[in-house]
Image 1 (cartoon, rainbow, N blue to C red):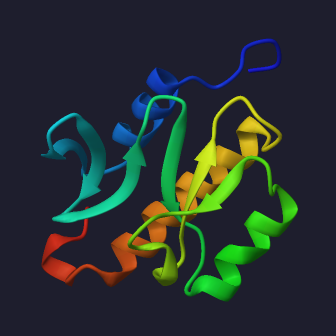
Image 2 (cartoon, rainbow, N blue to C red; image 1 turned 90 degrees about the vertical axis):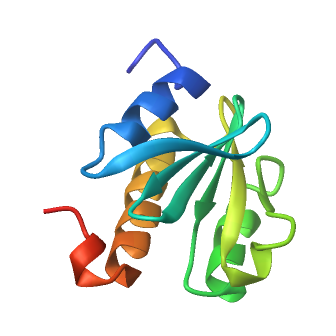
Length: 117
C-alpha cells in the first residue's frame, strides 16, 4: 500500500481474513474481531485496540515510541492492550504486524479445541 493509507475498512478486512476470525458486536456500536470466543482486535474506525504485550511494561514500549498515536486502552490496558491510531505516525505495516501478534497471542491462549486449524 505505498500510496494508500490503511483505513478502518481495510483493517477490518485484514483482521477477518485471519483463520477462524469473525466479527462481533458485544456492545452496541462497537465492532470487534474474535477468534474462538476471544477478542483480538477492537475495530474503531480510525483506530484499533490490540494486545501489544504480555503486560503493561511491554505495551508501554509502543506508547513510548509513538506517544501521540498510541495510548493505553481504558479498562484492559493494564493487561497489555493499547489503542493505535490509524493514519498517524505508526506505519501501516507495523499496525498489520501488531494485528498479527495480537491474533497469535489470543490464539495461543485458546483451548486446543477452539484453535483454528
